[in-house]
Length: 194
Image 1 (cartoon, one colour):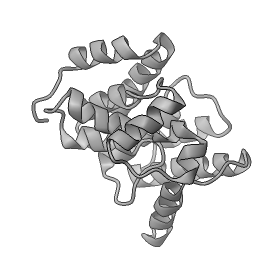
Image 2: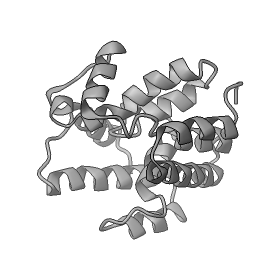
Image 3: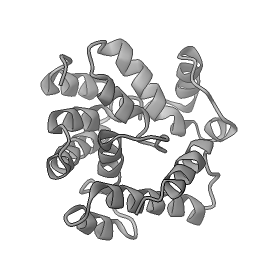
Image 4: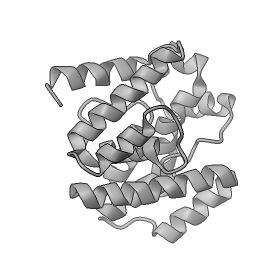
C-alpha cells in the first residue's frame, strides 16, 4: 500500500466528523472488509482503511451533499436530487482526495463505488461493497445467507449475490433505480458472471 494516513489517523478524522453510530458502522465495515480481503487474497490494510473511510460524507445533510457534488463537479441524476444520500459515496471520495492527498487511489475508488457500484469494479471495490452490506449489525432478509456465502464461495459469486439482493431491495421498496445501478447490473449479466 502506498503512503497515506495510518488507520489511527483516519479513525480520528472519521470520529471527528461522524456520529458515534456512524463511526461504529464504519469500524465494523473496516473489520469485515479486512476479513474478506484476507479470504479473497486482496490487500487487507487497504480494505480496512477503505471500510473505515467509506462513509466519510454519510452524516451530511441533503443540501450539503448536493452542494458538495456541484463543487466537485460530480454528475447528479434526478434520482440523486430526489434522494441526495445516494451521493454520499462519490462525495466522500472527492473529499477524501482533498483531506488525504496520499490516500491510495484504490482506497478512494472503493469508497466512491460502495453505494451502487461501478462498471469494472476491482476486487477491493467488491470487498468494500459486500462488507458494507453484511457487516455484523446489518439485519435484513437474506443477510445471513450472504454471510454464509462469504465463508464458502469465491468473491465474484458473493458480489453478484450481494448486488442482486441490493437491487431486489430497491425494487421491493418501490424506489427508483439509479442509472449507476442499472449500468452495473447490466455489466454483471453481460459479463456472464456467476
